[in-house]
Length: 102
Image 1: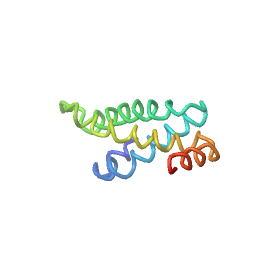
Image 2 (image 1 turned 180 degrees about the vertical axis):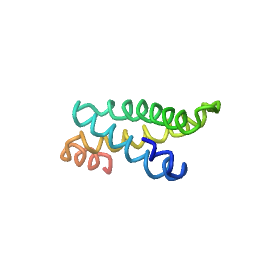
Image 3 (image 1 turned 60 degrees about the horizontal axis):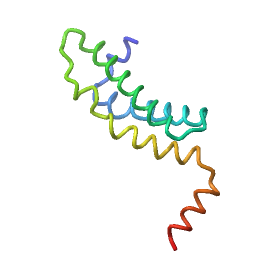
Image 4 (image 1 turned 120 degrees about the horizontal axis):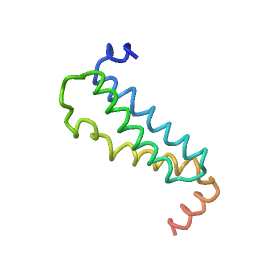
């Protein structure tokens, strides 16, 4: 995993990690057939991955908690939406949208 430390920190935090942790949560929600599993898995994997990344990138530095939990709200919200879209049957979503528009 030394190749990860050669990448730019902004690239890793903005391009590489977000799709990975969100897709991991959505995949877990699909496997469990439960919508709420997606955000939980996304939150845990995001916190673990960020903590691991910053502790290997900067082993001697004291890592501020806000650096690790900076995406702890946005990623689970996105994962909740995508998990709902993946797990909920399309017919039920269409029926709910039609009922809301009346």
